[in-house]
Image (tube, rainbow, N blue to C red):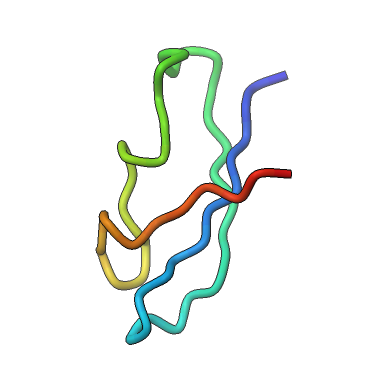
Length: 52
């Protein structure tokens, strides 16, 4: 099953709370939250991975 990742945007000016990333088997294993940006505000340093 391909990996999924839940992320939260911590920017106080962004109204997006949480989102989930689904990606394919082709994604490198070392891919992490730093490789993505918030789809709403575009910020990169405001994303945190939700650890379940």
